Length: 170
Image 1 (cartoon, rainbow, N blue to C red):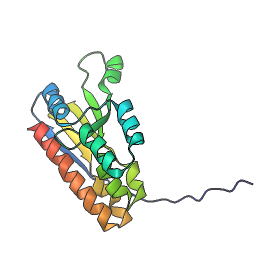
Image 2: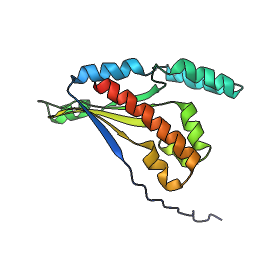
Image 3: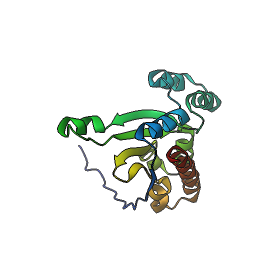
Image 4: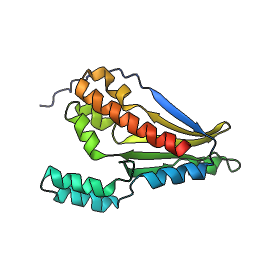
């Protein structure tokens, strides 16, 4: 006999931080591209599955991340879809999904829901005032859970992402 699931609700207040750059869109994307790792994801997951110890997992992740300590999980070019309906002067919009599984684990061991928010999303988009690099702060996602250990890791993650964005925007 099936039972009805229990529904648990949690209200989140999310803080978004955006850096506005006067650099050309392509230069901003290139700066981000150079700072993050770009592993072959199929091979990455095979290597993670084959790892016997956490130290081996650390080694796999260490090979996958770039100088920023992050790797790219996915890149979504939203602008290509807009271009299909707005053939002229279509703004470029790219969503990068980046992270470091070792940082996620440090949060998720305290708050499992951290896995819903990591890896993180960076949105890079052209607007009349410049190229915006936007990020929703992990600490804002985790604040309502009240776990100080997870929040400390989230704040450290936020600082690393903000440094990455500020560098790419400068």
